[in-house]
Amino acid sequence: MAYAFYTTKAFVLSRREVSEANFLYDFFTEQFGRISARAQGVRKLASKLRYNLQPFARVEVTLVRGREGWRIVGAWPDSHFASIKENSAKRHTFSEVLAMIDRLYTGERPEARLFEEVSAAAAFLDQNHLGSESLEAYRLLLVFRLVDQLGYAARPLPLEPFLEENAWTRDVVESFLPHRRIAAGIIEQALQASHL
Image (cartoon, rainbow, N blue to C red; front, side, top):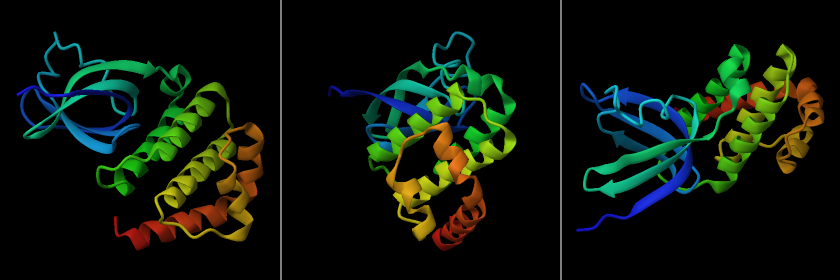
């Protein structure tokens, strides 16, 4: 029986060791949404997948679906996001966002708009230097948009414009600064209501 190969862009959300040389990866993909896929022999020094499947990286991954689920057959860096990798504050902020996706986004269903949002937000973060307050506003805005798109959040009137306009600019992040407390409260309510 021939298997179909699927290539898609993905963020690596997490990985778990399943045997001595094998890992199970959780991805947020452009085509399929959130999926788990097994990588065989990834801990071996000769593995071509080893260095491309780092947590929180964005990759292009080739998958095959078999009887036991998804299996990774290839992976390549899609966007390097060098500034995020090199700056510990940016890396920590973006890893928190991806951890939230890992926590809230269940099931295998495509969310192309959400993938686009996270990709645009990552590109913005990579290309801009943000102070600590702006970095916190960035994180809260992205998580707020995430819980809204997944259907967990209420839409208070003062924050409506931030949900309608999906652009990532310095002006948008700076204008979100005064709304951080409201957004944090809505996010907390969404997390409690979701029981996740």
